Image: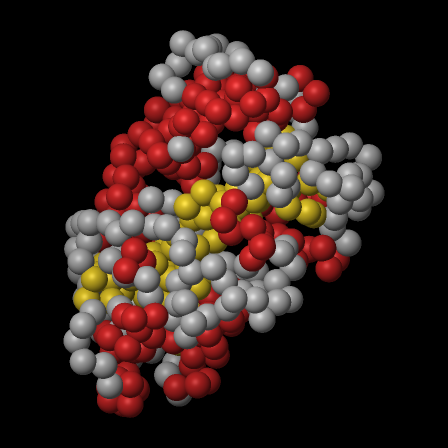
Length: 367
């Protein structure tokens, strides 16, 4: 096992987390067994496996359902407004939307078991972040000995026109959120990278270096996809004769076992990729509050989180480890990944349309 780096930075946000109450695991198990069946939701299919394992361990009927973040939020809001809460635990990667639409409205609340307080770094407690998921720049290892680019500005050069692949930022908000994150917290790194690549300072009519990079990347006509799986296929197909650089979830590196040729661009500056958090919340009005708390506790354990850990998704419990057999090798590159700062999640939420407009205009050649 590889000890994961526990110094990942993610500053706390606006909601209040229920923790500090005396924790009695045996009493919680007994109370949970007396409640109705549990329903849990996450954006990964691994939640089905985790729910089944939880049910077997505790004898509590539990259903895990894969659902996209937007649909998950819409479901919780609709149930709360109808006073007909059916969901119990929701795990959501769209931090700005979850903050604005679920936590601030009181439709969900964050719960951290007292016996886990010392295991979860303070920046992940309030609201509770269950994990951080890597998204990394990726190249085809069959076509290249090493990553063929060493600077993100190279991706805006003519030689890479049409040969960058990524999920469409107009459909996947994690990218517009990180555009804003980079502009607010790392813009100087983007400006410095420009000067390192071109040998002269950046001059732009846009508001900052990040906007200039985003506009240049969009104008270079990247191949946009509906999923990370499609990015993986574009970049790492074993029979490909064309070089593509892509950005995708490290979870897709499991396809290397099926012949894909995916490798982390660990030479690219100023960042190899991104880490985005997932909130784990309990719905207000659940009729299985103790079972929900028990499931939260289970997901914070090494046993409970293992099915997602194998994909490189990093538990916030410092006692848990990234498995040595995790296929991407991302554990060696965590310090090269930008970390999401939730103190500006509301600004990310408010600015999404502006970033989408910038992307669309640049891609259409109208900037």
